Image 1: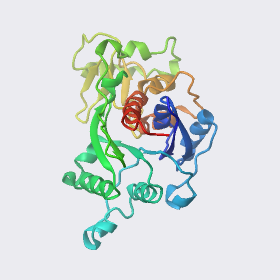
Image 2: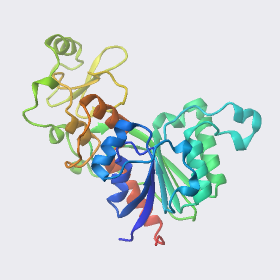
Image 3: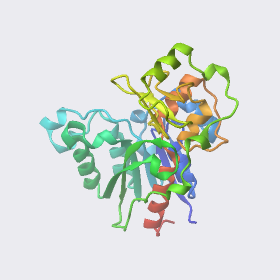
Image 4: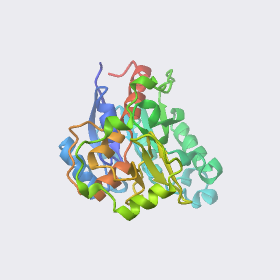
Length: 307
């Protein structure tokens, strides 16, 4: 397999990096703003990411083949509506990706974001993003992919945007066969410490509101806005800002740190160096590694000319 280089922007704890390293990529630069995420990243990759991307000159970034970024989505600037196309993305973190692509002109990029990006502001935000990427000379492809289809027991839908300078033939990966997908039972730890178990009153309250009282264990349930408890044979999407008991296993306990990492497809040797609340936030902000690996493999197939 040919080696290629990439940069890891808005790196978090390195989920996207893991996916691209697994198909032969080498990271030459990373950037992350959050100090706790940087601590986890350093423990696992041996490097502390550069800080705030808005303060980094694109000229100082080493040359690379593919730009990667799970960029945070903030609303786009109203200024753009008054000042035209060039200023539409000002003040957003997408603008940082745009200026680096403009300066470095890599062969390709892959961006990841929440599914709702496609609907934000009646689809205008997404249209602006695609238009700006195409204006830089890239052939752009986008699709919503679900982590459930790629082997982890978590329903997590994310928009993936990829682009190539050359007009290559690219297709998004297809779901893996059901028999190869992990089930909840495959990711659960045995002999879990009692600190993960919820108080009896929480447990009883959840069980009373459980939609299907005879649902087979193990299951994962979450509480929706209306307060009803729905069991599933998979986890709902891990969320950075979710309440402590947002998802519970068998309505008895919270998932452990390792179980949350497994729900995102992280390897068993991934080091946990921050407290529970922080790893919960980091997993919620991260990506399902098998989804990224599948996209990375298809991108490489498309760019057969990578040196």
